[in-house]
Length: 294
Image (cartoon, rainbow, N blue to C red; front, side, top):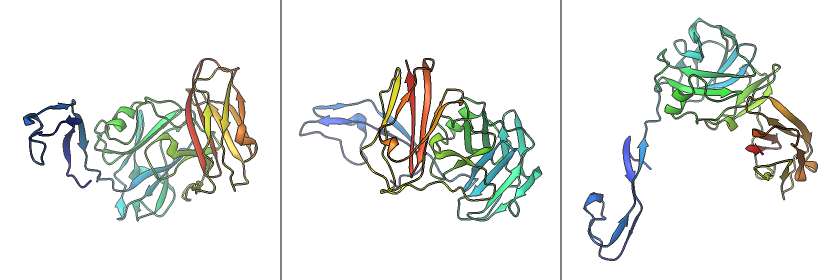
């Protein structure tokens, strides 16, 4: 903690008494004595202060609307920022504002713009750039892809440290949107919900009492998977269970209450062999798990 920007090497060292050279400021190549030194792991310490400050993509829907939010502590002019849904690009200052005051976002402020490109709920990507240098990872400050992984700008987002190779948000319904929970850079930080342009994303905040720690087994599976928990929940609403194929298409969906979800069995014998994603949301719980159907 507190180390400056740069690269460091980390080793595992085992040694007997009498080792010389294992002091602060010494060189690992100059150790003397009876010891075993592993190969090093390189750790790159990046400057996490990017020019975009705290601007994030907060919500996307298939009405060509993208909501942006300033999660930082200073006002930011986003008029010269760019949205990318390859192969289409929009400079934000040229777009129509659906709701929100202007393109100078104060801390916590939201704005929704109408893009000039088609947004497909079944498959797509959205990148937020500070400039139109689309292959430069330092210009890409936020990113999400849905439906499938490996879109055109996904490798740039991985280089920028804001996405993970192979990760994607499941496809969403045409009457819904995908909303960001404000906590990270993974598909699990996005949830399908009702459209709410320029409204805060009303995602459930987990608490210790409300959260069910769900388990899924077996994995890989053949004919059946089972959800199980030992805990009770004070949440009396519904838990939504959705199973997606690798293209983000819904192949199974169901709703359960806090009693029936405690030992829920799901028949998957009708599915072809392959990879699927199971997502359970409700009562402060969110289980997202990739499963393999044999």
